Amino acid sequence: MAEQHIRQEIIAFARRCYERDLLVALDGNLSALLPSGEVLCTRAGCHKGLLTDDDLVVIDRKGNKVRGNGDPTSEMAMHLACYDARPDVRAVVHAHPPISVAFTVAGVSMARCVLPEVVLTLGTIPTLDYRTTGTEDLAHVVGRHIVHHDAVLMDRHGAVCVGGDLLEAFCRLEIMEHTALITKTARDMGRVQELAADEAVKLRAMGLRRYGGPPSAVAKAGDPGADLPAVCLACSGCGNPSPTGIGPAGVGARADLRLARVAVRSPFTLEAALTEARRFVGDAGTAESSPAPELETAIVSEVLRALKDA
Ligand SMILES: [Zn+2]
Image (cartoon, rainbow, N blue to C red):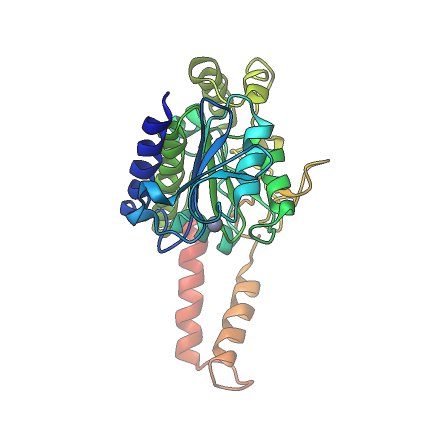
């Protein structure tokens, strides 16, 4: 693909990121590999909704500027880490999709098997442990996990999505945020029901064979569990959730990757719920006193109703 065409694509998809509320102001950055092997990226400090050809900078694979106005994006190292990690990656889109980022702020994982089409095409979306923006450390962590995933979330920051071209990377970003919206809406309605583990594995294996994915994941298409993290299987209806409601902080060597934090109600009893309710009422301004009898009656009936629904 000619450089001029790639330039137009970066501008078009940057504007779409802005128009779709996937980033605001000077957030985010996009890049693509040029036929020369150099990287075309957005410059630092430009508004993606107003991007022009003058906002694009060419860098070499070590991050040195080759041509263009201004400095390359401050997240240049993260982009280069993605290209270094995956020879099949030719475009990287980094944005701050608000609902997806809110999941990380709330400590709720998106690495769950909920929507069949997402399991087919993306698998699970991991949240990487927090690192300072713009650092080599962050770039290193992203590169290490992009080996296994086409879309990752950085804690309290944003998304990194890769693809064979800008359209593919952008689609993955859109799918991530759309999944976050659906999952959030379901959570608001009461709960998120995950796919059964065997169905999730069947879909994932099928998706890897049909649509491809990271080469390391495709290589696992025939394995038990495909490339789905074990903790994901453990939370997909097997009745073995973490008692704290939070999944392991890491699995083996992948200690900086939060695979799944399962939103599970901790086992609660009527007495525990009442204690919590009394504490809340106490905190609300009635000092150490117990709630009024009528309030306590109301609390008991609410708790009983909740227990019946659970
Ligand atoms: Zn960012």
